[in-house]
Amino acid sequence: MENQTRKKRRTWAATAHYDFFRFLQDQIRRLEERKQVRTAETYASTLRSLQRFWPYPTLYFSEIDNDLMLAYEAWLRHNNVSRNTSSFYMRILRAVCNRASEQGFRLPTGLFRHVYTGVGKTIKRAITLDMVRQLKQIDLSHSSSLAFARDMFLFSFYTRGMSFVDMASLQHANLKNGFLTYRRKKTGRTLTIRWEECMQTIVERYAIATSPYLLPIVTSSGDPRRCYLSKMSLINRNLKRISEQLSITPPLTMYVARHTWASVAKNENIPLSIISESMGHDSEATTQIYLASLNAEKVDRANQMIIDLL
Image 1 (cartoon, rainbow, N blue to C red):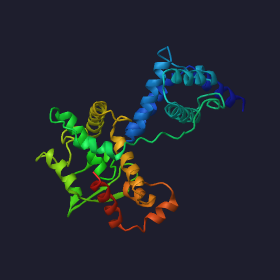
Image 2 (cartoon, helix red, strand yellow):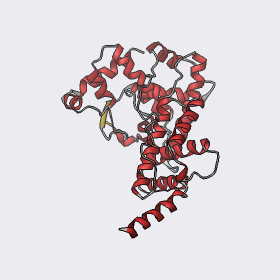
Image 3 (tube, rainbow, N blue to C red):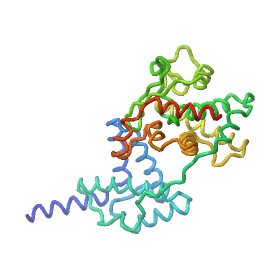
Image 4 (cartoon, helix red, strand yellow):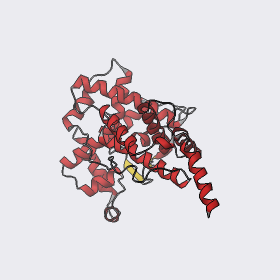
């Protein structure tokens, strides 16, 4: 027993001077090896934030305590980081610290007791139908990049608020017999949308004969995720420029397109169950049981009704 205690003490002594940044980098590398790319990116984002806060190149485990977490949280707020984003970083650090404790690293108990780790309600971002009409009608012939951003926003709106990552993955094989069928990246659910003329117009406008993709977001030779992230960043910047031209608030983003479709559908008194089914939401089990019995024609009629309002 005494030997085990001494061995434990030696382990704690060694880990106390181990660099937490290095430990977190090891976790990121393991996530990447397991192809958990999105999780690895969030861990990397947290690491960069913590490194900007900490004034030294290393952060030893012995320096991690409740005061450090409180100081980091205060620094985030001072730098205008939202409460939810701050909580997001804290939850990731908590997960990393739990993993470290499992591996024999000694950390104070209740390390995150005094910092916020909850999830508050976010403000829904949606524009009005009149604003969508303005966006559709604005002359952007002077800028192909602005026109492309506008068309990607409208394509998302036309396709029941399709997320940009799902748009990037669409291929010609997804379109058959007048219906677009795809699997949502986020939930794995398969959705089918009746193909409308407005969707076809956008696809034809940017068609690349040699590409398997419906939209020119991912190139055949490039890394799909890198292409998607780069193109989304560029599109969102251009949408912001369009927002300024039209004096639209909140500023347009691809995420706003998804919220807007749901908001317009709600304002048109389309039942919540139809909206949930249309957008491929996968949340409450009881809702999913009810949604399973919905007729697909109702979903298509709901989408056509919204498109016809433009």
